[in-house]
Image (cartoon, rainbow, N blue to C red; front, side, top):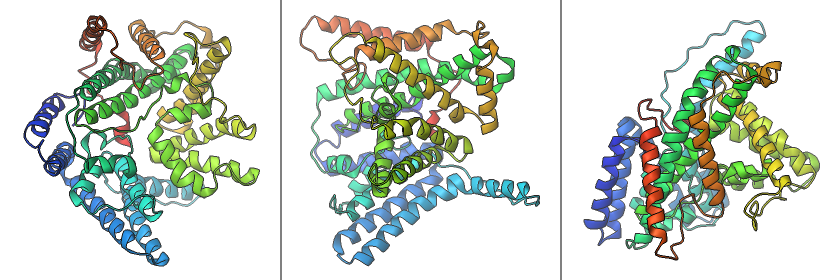
Amino acid sequence: MLFNSIEFAIFLPVVFVLYWFVTNKSTGRQNVLLLIASYFFYGWWDWRFLSLIAFSTLVDYLVGIQLGESDNPKRRRILLLVSIFVNIGFLVYFKYFNFFIDSFAEAFTLMGKNFAPNRLNIVLPVGISFYTFQTLSYSIDVYRRKIEPTKKLIDFAAFVSFFPQLVAGPIERASNLLPQFSKERIFDQAKATDGMRQILWGLFKKIVIADNCAYYVNEIFSNPDQHSGSTLLLGAVLFAFQIYGDFSGYSDIAIGTARLFGFDLMRNFALPYFSRDIAEFWRRWHISLSTWFRDYVYIPLGGSRGSLWQKVRNVFIIFLVSGFWHGANWTFIAWGFINALFFIPLLLGKQNRKNIDQVAANTIFPSLKELLQMLFTFFITTLAWVFFRAESIKDAFIYLKGIFSTSLFKRPEIFPSEILILITILVIIEWIQRKKQHALEVQVKYRFTRPVRWSLYTLIILVIFLFGDFDSGYEFIYFQF
């Protein structure tokens, strides 16, 4: 079930009414309702894969209880390995099995040997990379004694399958989300209203920005040899805004939807294209995944401590693993490798924590230095996105070669002026609201602001209906991960 579908437009208010008007006197009943609604939400796509979520949930629930009751180091390590084996095992089978088979076949072919194994007809379950990481982090945190295991199966199952963030994050930590299922939840009109604003902005980014960009991106990336360098560069820029609008739009809708039910999810995007270097970009892009890898992979490896070689090694490992998490294709690994190359100079020069404050914190406009830094960071990020979007590494290099050709200075054959104007509006609004949690967050201090606010909401809704792409039916990009 897509957030931008008629089905969800019916599903959400039905669950909302049942939640606040039928089961509102019992937190337990509310949790049962959320669990049923979440399984219905996921099962709408393919009910057969509900068994995977249920099995993963049950395994980590039982592992958590056993970890909490045991002080035997060996037994606790075995229990943690069970959780890792189950969750990573699901990922390897459903997401990477055919990739490994194909890679082995290609390796044998390069050695002059004929090896043609049978590929499995495997359907990738939507959201498997997200909910497996969420349940796995729970087991790791219980193992590390950072949190106490829960004995409430319904609460834990609702935490794992919570429908707003089930299929594409944010990847929540049990320390933040799980306790919210145990607390009494009272309807907060201010929180719900703010959630609606964030949903509206997320829909704008998805339907108006991302889906309109997708049409031109698909056309340009499908036929790079037929376009000038300027058009290819424009295509890469459009993809940068497509993936941002698509994924951050999903996160906005997820966070806003959770707020309707009294839950607070972590922020997943903090205006990454306003970053002044690549390190700042990765502190602002897909924050839930970046911090997951930081806490469960990077820091256990030693982080930025140790010798120069160890620091460099750890950076490459974290970016390569992050790239591989995104998909079973060498293009994603290459994308991770390129981002590591961008990051290493900052680490070696001890500049990776330089830009941790808000850009243009005390001024309306950025300084010339900040503007150039943001443009350069966006440029190299956009070049890296070419590998993310390309079907193969060969295609990515062909695309980049086409960009850096003499035709780069020609007028683009494709120039979607309406889309570029809408992107400009997006950038302006998010720049003005850069100190807020989302672009439509407001602090109501004066009564006269209400007409202005409602005029803005009405205008955004009109723009969505006038310029939104409702016919193509593009799924969210991160559904494939």
